[in-house]
Length: 257
Image 1 (cartoon, rainbow, N blue to C red):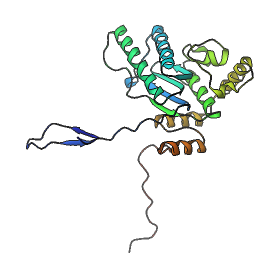
Image 2: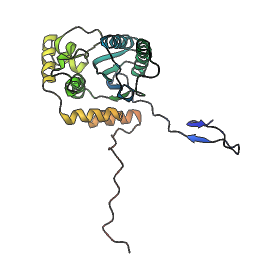
Image 3: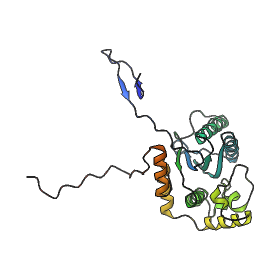
Image 4: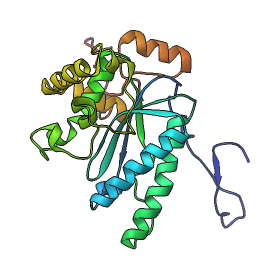
């Protein structure tokens, strides 16, 4: 059977009917390049119901990241979705990590709440993230999620994120600092203070929107040079698509003869 075709029931006259489907493009995935990962609950339903669920997910995240050679730099567990900033050491590491978390966490969740079926809304979304200012902006975007959602006034008031580790030095075995974070200071005290000040300064609305759009469309987020490098390495188009239907071409100013 040709690739990309799905066999269907035979028509009355006995002729096979085939419907051509669009093959899914592989994820943009490069070892050593951080990724912003978002996974949402199906139909935006809650994927965490009580404290035990958050603890369990963090445990699964730590074990899966270690097993699949992924460094987790920042995370937040919201009521119905998850944000992660992760750098894989091997091709496909992030996908394998998320699959492992999904299998184990969903099985436990379904058992605890006597439910069946999927918990997540399809495949997770991800975007490659440029270094330095973009990585640090992604840190802030993730850890400020509870504030943007009006769940807390300060990021430190939210229990289920990496903020306490990255800004206050609270030990979190799941978190590995990115090099951009390490360069914030010569010693831990300096890094913590500098990062806390960055978060206190917030993130521009335009920048937050830009990261969200690039992640939704799974396009690399960064400088023009970074995006062209990714395009050259992967052979994939890197520009985000505008929302809605494409604009119609303008009518000619000259009347038809």
